[in-house]
Every structure is written in structure tokens, then in C-alpha cells.
Image 1: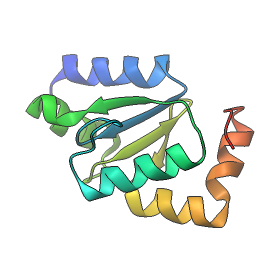
Image 2: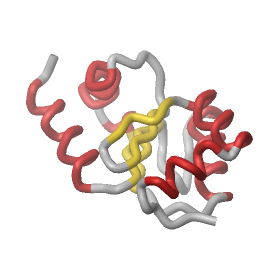
Image 3: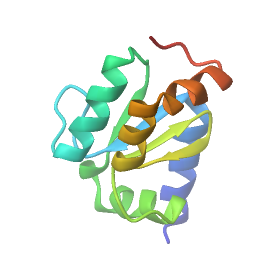
Length: 109
């Protein structure tokens, strides 16, 4: 496990209220799962930082090690790992994602 990469990931998560580690960018997602989460977040009008894991193999592996979660995308809200694509989409449909955002004082529609 690369300590520098882990520290960089921790800094990104700590410094941004909402972060999506994804394949591609929010403007140009490069996989269907990332695109689905971007669409859900856009629909809710959430401000978030996108981090393209395809820019570095170390980052791509590092985020999986960071959470011990095997897939990308990964969503963090106020430093807390929320989940991957299926979890986020389920939470979006049930309104649970909106509840988490309200609890953490994140503006959204």
C-alpha cells in the first residue's frame, strides 16, 4: 500500500464535503457506473469534487485499499464513505441519500 497515495486520498476526502472517486470526470464519465452516480448527483444539484482514478494506477488501487471496497465509483460525504454505484442509486431512489445529505448539512434539491 502506497502511503503517499493514501495520504493524498485522505486529504482530498478531508478537504471536500462531497467527493466522488470515479472513472473519468463529471463532465465526461468513462464508465456506466460512474455516469449513473454523476446523473444522480446532478439530478439532486449537489456540489462535489470529482477525482478521476484513471489518471493513475496507484490512485485507482489506492482508493480501493483506502476503503477496502473493490469497486469504483466511491462516494464520500463529510469524510464518510457512503458507497458505490448500486448503494448510491438505491439510496437516491428511496430518499435515503437526501436524508444523509440533510444530516450533514449538504445543500441539494
